[in-house]
Image 1: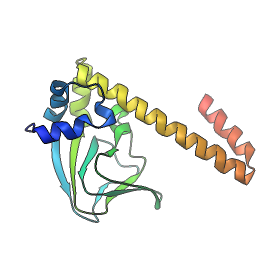
Image 2: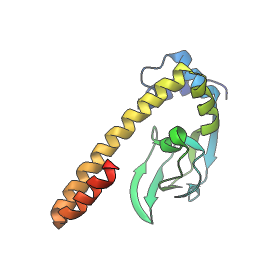
Image 3: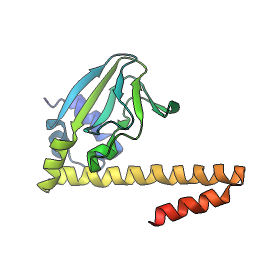
Image 4: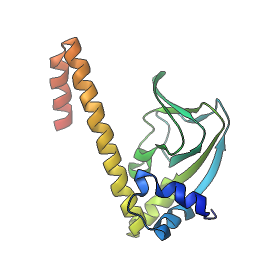
Length: 165
């Protein structure tokens, strides 16, 4: 994909690109492709094979799990980071709420850069791990709060045992 100054500026502002030089951000753009999704279209479905990370450049998407809406995300949002790092199946469904322009980074291309010890890929991996860690901390807090309200502390203990395995 051709690297443009506005694209580099947009990506440089993302947490996943924190600490990357302009040249390293350009390396990331080299392995990316721009894609468009129509309003109402499913970008990816829960439990489908994870093959790419997406950055929302324009538009808005909804993230849902088992039919329940989890979030509405817009410009600058990153989707599919678990697939990029671990090749995991999709944990949620993402549907376009409007016409969307997205940047798609394939897992295969990214993993090749990572295997070659590419510094940009290593920094992105580190940054995505930090983003995922913060998200997990928020989810843990919400879980504890929710279980505390329902007085299902035994469920919290079960959750703790799962985490320790």
